[in-house]
Image 1: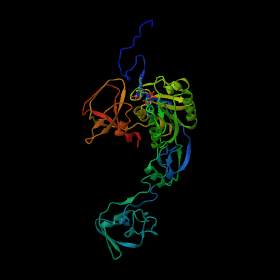
Image 2: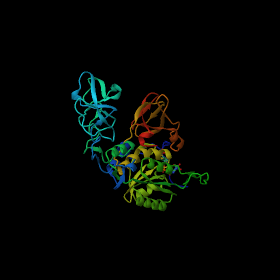
Image 3: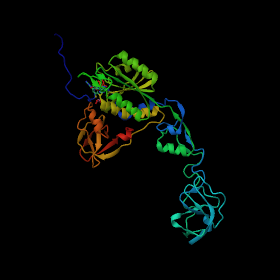
Image 4: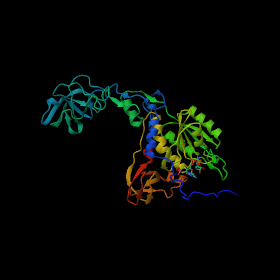
Length: 425
Ligand SMILES: Nc1nc2c(c(=O)[nH]1)N[C@H]1C(S)=C(S)[C@@H](COP(=O)(O)OP(=O)(O)OC[C@H]3O[C@@H](n4cnc5c(N)ncnc54)[C@H](O)[C@@H]3O)O[C@H]1N2
Ligand code: MOO
């Protein structure tokens, strides 16, 4: 061979080293840009309230009747007009009949008289106060108790929970079990909600065998990302769409992205996101989609490719399962929530003392697989290897290390974000 000798760069052996001349986008800036670029994409439909858990309100839910609709009793006891009572032992004659929930008292209670009343019963005319039955003696058609009693004691005001015309739940709210109680209590049998976001999930890679348990040669691995991402999507109450697996073949990947863009509102791919010889997803997104050339200062997950394909947002997640999950939780989750009409969401973490030591260089944010030990201190998985899937199961959350340098020793407060805070279940 002739010519100039090959001169390699100085060995750094750090795939997270920041190459010269590349603008690294801090995680927060990338999130802000993503948030600004997206908007809700699903239309609205009407569904019965009982079937609406997990759905996102497309319209404000307004109370068409007050809850409770009329003043009622909060306890089992005796009702009367407060004005006729005073200090010391009261003995009031009992009227015939009673007021019960669902069986209103027929008539009025004169001042100075009392009526038997049960929890949930509308206060009869003339009654504004109720004494607990445990505080009473009864006999010979009378009830006796020790006054004074507070005016309106043991009663509930009409509309004290929600008044007619009041906003019960705002558009954009994702309905949970207690919300179904509220809507039902207000008589709202149907709600207008966004159609569920269709989330396509596609795995790429010549080494991937799509179905676990199917025969695999030593150079082949079973697809771990697709089941994880499909389960994330359904756990977030979206409609997962299994786009399957394709080999590292640009035409096949393009065809599957076409199908995804046709049938889905957003597509999550994994693998081929970085810039290697076989990293066709990022190459395709760059050539035929609109790849935002962000290089995100993040570990793991730096190769995340954010783009649109035929107008549909595509999250080109890294193939390493740990990086795929971190990128899905940090980037896809808030973005999907926004696309689905529920607005941007940020996970709520909290400070926990570290149970580990780590010195971190400035310039990128890091997420570590973590869990709290019995003392409530955050311990981290033994390896930061991005292919160590077992660590994802070992963990109950992530420790987030800030973009700047950090020198963590046992006891240093670190931010722990439980999996639950990412809606992961
Ligand atoms: N020379 C460099 N090599 C790598 C760098 C780098 O900066 N310089 N970055 C590394 C990092 S960080 C990541 S992350 C990966 C990014 O990889 P890609 O998104 O291009 O993904 P692949 O190369 O296709 O796969 C990476 C890894 O993950 C496995 N994989 C892929 N899909 C699945 C799946 N569905 N289930 C389970 N495992 C999967 C794949 O077999 C590879 O082992 O690049 C590093 N390399
Ligand atoms: O960021 Mo790679 O994203 O570590 O595995």
